[in-house]
Structure formats: structure tokens, C-alpha cells
Image: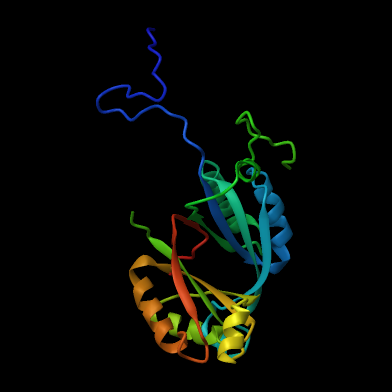
Length: 142
Length: 104
């Protein structure tokens, strides 16, 4: 098979985009789960190359009218802010969805918000779980 | 770029999160999450104007369909906006993927 290498950084063809390796973007993954499952989900997300997480106690307000009148509407929740690399976000969300469905008492909601800026190369490497050579570092993954 | 959902983030004085959720639910939001927080408004401004800004705040996160975002923001502004005792600030962030939402 004849394989022609694609020139990096130059236009390969008239209608093809340039073949450059762009910096991997980061996303803010927000996970809202029951309070007693906070540590579990924090640990689970670490396996997707997440190096920085922020855990907050919160309470949910969704509920039925009946629960509202009985005063049982509010429930203790944990909100988890995780910075995840864009290419790992779909896997992380799919993994979370499976846990939400299968884990007893593990129901929750998760969504990603794109980030538009970050400052500091070292911070970026830390957050995107990459070392200086661009290789992924899963040394501390579970 | 169009997003199907957006996250409304509303910062209000402590005790007003229920008011935020009440107006949001009237428009069509299904639920929200409330986090306790502490405001750090400019101390100079407080001194000059001789007022005290209540530092205890609540942050309300509400995930809503994009089409009702503006209605909810307007309703929040009217009932718990900066000119009300709730002194609320609200803004919306784009959300590109969601998992865990229950079908109605």
C-alpha cells in the first residue's frame, strides 16, 4: 500500500484542514450526587486522568409536590467540580452514566462546561495529566 | 454554537435560594442544587457607602433547556435581582454534554 505522509502544519489538500496537533482543551465536569457517594465518584473520576477536583456539600431542591408539603423535599447532595481533558470527557460521562444507572443510591447528574482560558504551562500540564513530553501520566490513577 | 442545555448559576443572599427555585420552577425548571458560599464584595465600597453587604450567600445551580434560559433569567432578575433584598446575580453557562437527566 502506498502511504503518503501528510505534511504537518501545512494544508494537505484544497479541502482538507491542516494536520496540526492542537493543545488538548479542558472541560469543567460538574457531577451532582448523593452526599454519601461523594468519595466514590471522586475516586472514580481520577481514573479518567482528572488531577484536580473540588468537592462541595450542597442540597438538592428537586422533588414531588407531596414531598414538598411533607417537608421532605430537600436532600443532601455533593457537588463535584473536576477538570477533565476534552478527549476524556465523553468516556468519563459514559462511565458516570453507567454508575448512575447501576449503583444502588448512586443516582446523579453530570454535565460538562467548556473552558475558554487557562494560564500557566505547568498548571495546564498538571490539569491535563500530561508530562513535558506530552505523554499521559497515569502513575497516580486507580 | 447552539447548546441544548445551559447551566444557570445564581448567587443570592442566604435564605433566598428557595425564592430562586420557586420562580425557576414556575417557568419550567425541574430542580436545582444549592451550595452555601461567602461573598467577598469590595470592603472599600462598603465603607464609602456605609452599608454592610451580607457575606453569607447561596449559589443555586439550575440545569435548564436553552429555550427557557432567558425566561428564567428574567424571572430571577425580577424577583431576586440586585434591587431586591435577595441581591441576586445570575448568569448562564453553556453545557455541551449531559448525563443522568430523567425523562419526564
